[in-house]
Length: 314
Image (cartoon, rainbow, N blue to C red; front, side, top):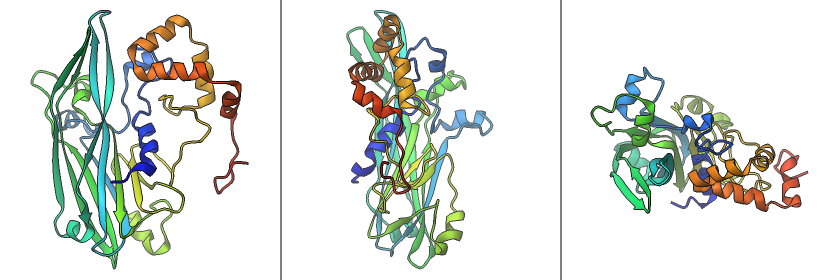
């Protein structure tokens, strides 16, 4: 799959809320993390009376004949438990994962839905006094298509967490997260057809669009304006063709981030706070370095930009 046009958006969304200002493990805000797009193990999800899900469903519309094909890619984070035995400090990092399905013609998907199982094994690595551990994660991606009119299809992608929690672990969120798919996103790309906007569907697709059922995710058209070959389905509500503001110098990871305000706050951090942030996470260290290197011209761009309806800067 050629995801280059949406990779930057997905990369930013995967880590939305990953670590919050002031980027320290001791901060109360960072005691409850990974709140977006979590697909939990089934046993944990069912114990929560429906408040936490073990599945995620994307439904979108595609136009094209039966030979038009779709590529499906599911991206998510996997928790890495890090323990520093030298300073006796623990922290949860994350590693990016990608599971892709083979190219699937719409006619084939309509005749026989696809079920793709995947398994990520337990892993552990040691780097000096630091030990990093990843728990096993298991899941299934189901894909199907249904003809809704001539040369129009409803495409469904379901993500299921089929993993089990170890015996005696209890049903606590912090123990279920390492076995979960974190910040799960689904990317679909079509060849020989086009996707239909669910936000602004053409009149002939209005009824079919309203019948789409999305669970825990929000599909929008992605890529450059006018392109309809890619769908990005995110647990964060977006508009069609989302884009990162060119004025943004880099990710700040804090939910609903406002670059200027967060940058100013980082500049007020004490040296002790900065040392703690650098120590717990490589991404926090890069934020501090980037803020320290911002010149006055770069900082002035963070203050705000007016844009017209076509997206041009004013």
